[in-house]
Amino acid sequence: MKLNEIQDLIKFVAKSGVSEVELETKEVKIVIKTPAGKKPEAPVFVQAAPAPQAIAAVPQQLVAPAPTAAPAASSAPAATPTSDDSKLITIKSPMIGTFYRSPGPDKALFVNVGDEVTPEKTVCIIEAMKLFNEIESGVKGKIVKVLVNDATPVEYDQPLFLVEPH
Amino acid sequence: MNTLFIGQHIIELSETDSTNTYAIHLLKEKAVAEGTLIFTQNQKAGRGQMGHTWQAERGKNLTFSLVLSPLFLPIEKQFYISKIASLAVFETLTHFLPASRYDIKIKWPNDLLANQQKICGILIENICREQFLQSAVVGVGINVNQIHFHELPKPTTSLALLAQKEFDVRQVLSVFCKQFEAWYLLLKQNRLEHINRSYTSCLYLLHEMAPYQSKEGVFEAQIQAVEESGQLILRTAQNEIKNFSFKELQFMRSL
Image 1 (cartoon, rainbow over the protein chains, first blue to last red):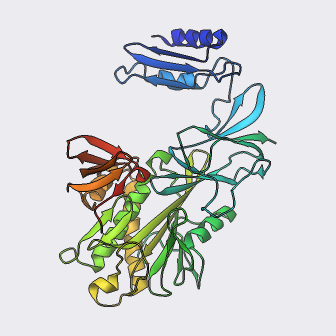
Image 2 (tube, rainbow over the protein chains, first blue to last red):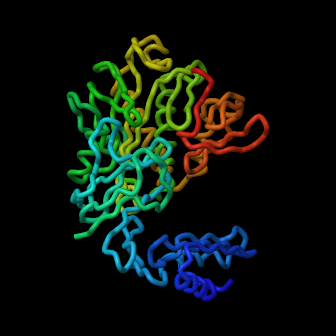
Image 3 (cartoon, rainbow over the protein chains, first blue to last red):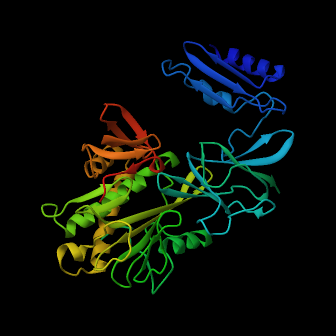
């Protein structure tokens, strides 16, 4: 499958309004998801099949230039705009692990909805294999939503907080 | 300290709640030189993982935190910090307790056992900025001269209990710093295969059939190796290969 064919497919899915399309060929498997109830946005997940090397470079190119959302290509994945029509910034998990909102069971939360944060402010801890990672906000703004419950598992790149930037 | 940078700058506190907490606060305030060591003879509220405590009798044990800036290390490879810290403690212990007479092992992921009893705990806390490991704080607690351990859930020992003599806490620290620096420089040189081989060879219950518990129940298996992510690779009695994260698996062989 050629790159322009994949791009056309994404454009087609985005216009069609369906929420999810999965396509698997011999050389590549593509899953295109659009957030339910929202304007179709961007491919969330593109995975190359193990065999072909020519395709291997494709997924990375695809994730950034999406049909409707156009995040700044070089900005850190930890904090990228969610879409054009929303000014909110998503703080995402840089790793697989367990999400904690406070430094210990009886300790105060790092942040609450409504709190102002600076880029250096620790917003949560993600524990991975007994290593405890304090995750910094990366942006200046106000926390408007916490997307994950305390002490639950998170995936790489999973959205954790929505921040209204200043 | 006979090192290039590890332990070249030491902040000694007469007492503190936790050297890790102190180090993290310091890092949030200002730049801290790599290799800086926070050391106290009286840690009042030592921390283990999430809510667990680490008790140390005043002046008897070695409790310290080491500050690193491992910006060269991709976040997904952070378990290597755990591996090299375990290896450095392993070599520190074998320096004082010769391997011919004492059985020193690393219990995955990063506990140290001497003659099947816990002798050291490691607590690693990182600060992630953007997609990088801005700082890592390696907290180490080694039981050195403490003889009595009360109300601990697992059998615990110390250098003094095993060797029947007292040790100089600062000398233990100095050996650790030298060992840690050597392993840290290997990590910087990307000598991952060497680190992996060494770590695996020190593992408690390596290639031994032993009981484990996962969410599917208790089963018999042998430890094969540890993934780059830190996951433990087991070969079950039915010859299946299975990977487990720290929270997904319990060792059922009692210490």
